[in-house]
Length: 409
Image 1 (tube, rainbow, N blue to C red):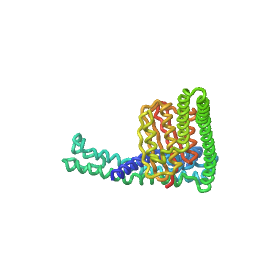
Image 2 (image 1 turned 30 degrees about the vertical axis):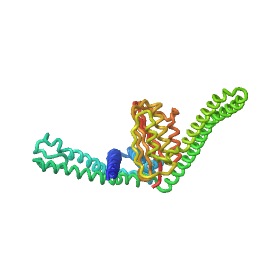
Image 3 (image 1 turned 90 degrees about the vertical axis):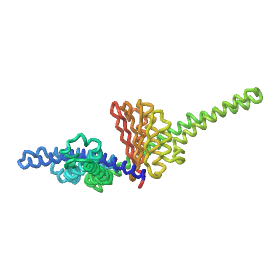
Image 4 (image 1 turned 180 degrees about the vertical axis):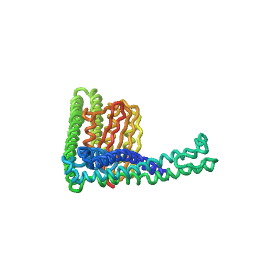
């Protein structure tokens, strides 16, 4: 029961984050809608005709922000083709019409859903904590929020607190549904039409396939270098030491023990390097302990204090778990080497058919994917699995790395 409640609370908090993001884009949509109506009214006296193209550009900018928001929280919403040049063509263009319809829906219904979704937890906190500060109010002023009656005694205070509990229950129970309803218009109207979606998807998969082949080639070269520069040299040294021991057995028997000791040390080093290569291909710890246990080992071995939060019911595909493991491993390596952070948080959650990995540190920020810090390798590995990789690292920090992988239903 406790685990179920914690999971429901996490889902509600996640939904609240979606609702707040949707409320932000709905405010932008409402502003764009007002501008579109003003331009439409001014067109009645011809003065607004030169401003009509700005309506399409503003609508596209707001719609692209909503596409990006929806893509962060679920299946990717692909962008629309470029805007037509002329106003007449734009008015006949189906994607433009769908964006204008979305503007009207999201700027009104989306704003109302966002306001309700945000108000419920605010009332829950305000009314739920009312017994702690009711004494500071004049009884004639009533209570917080929707409470307008006189607060006179413990019974009235209890009633206000009970309203807070109800608001909290409604927010936890209906919050995810409100977030889904708020996103519904965007997923229906901002997604490209079937034929356009298919062509864009083919192009995306072609690029993904090329990235997968490049990532595979890079991985093969890495394994080849590891075997050639490390293990092979250890084995050559071992062969030389065994030959020296055979010759010393006749000429200098007292030196045989020292040579064999060096040979044993070379053997142990070769075995250690072979294990490292094998772990680089597919860590055995994933099979033995699962993703949660493997990440626990990574967090424990990190020299920067690492907080781990894993909520992955059941097992994902082996390739998905391996990709998530390598993302976290490379991210923690970058944190230790480059960030100067004092703490790092790793969160891994499964939401439906997506596995989401987030690594956040409080370091100096300014991470550059083109600087050769391993971030490009993380992106290639994630995108090769048809996943998404996003990194934000403003100067001064914090740095947040997010990866999303498809993991089936």
